Image (cartoon, rainbow, N blue to C red; front, top):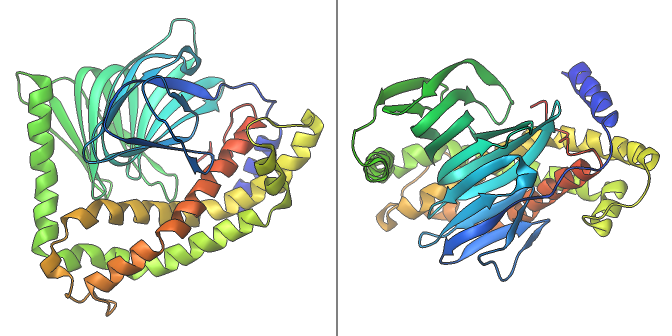
Length: 363
């Protein structure tokens, strides 16, 4: 693993200069309040026309939604719709000369209608902590809940792979989602396909998705402790490692300078080569623990609204009550949010000096 990481560091340092676009799209339509987090801060005045930049995190409330139109800079035409109660990161990576646009779906549901622009090397995919969905000139919908993913395709085809965000491993086999077929990717990596109802696609999807999600909610309500035990047992460890990783990044003097410079880097190619070398090792070393903490954080967040008040006094396997665990989780909210923002900002600042190539493009 050390040799692999060393090789990755060398390859990353040989990558080119600044030249990729930060603006990937703009808000075409929105309802309610939509939160956009960029470079460690929450944007104010988000409205129709607001730009979406690389590595922006978009979050909708239970009463809000947003439609984003991709710009020419993305190499795509079409839209991304983010429905209520969803958190997603919009990103673009330059991989082997191809602009790969990705929706990192952390919680909730999205729908895409996209195709590649003629003469442009571009691609699109949706990635969750447990799946990678490759898009081929497609109109499709994705829902994520409790580690499982449900996919339905209205037009075209989506290649569905099992994936582990913590290790970066992806299954060698995929199941295609095509019109008339549903695909479910389970948290344990298993996948299955089933029939999708004929008729109005949008209405049928809403009904199928809600039935699917309600199945998991009913399991949670019936025994919240059973579903929370795995998270409660690991959260103290993961949150500690996340804070340790953030402290390591904050102590990096080169990264401190990058943060001061913001989105307009100064210096030459030769200077960037040295600076990247000073940052990339720390970024790669903290990635694994950061990803485990981020995944666990959002999994807990999406479950909390469905835990009944009557369950708060029940004991978890670690001896905590559900209520005390939730209080501990909420207390760490700001610290965790700041650590995640720093991690995202560090990756973006690296990409600005590396021709759009992420230090994690091999994961």
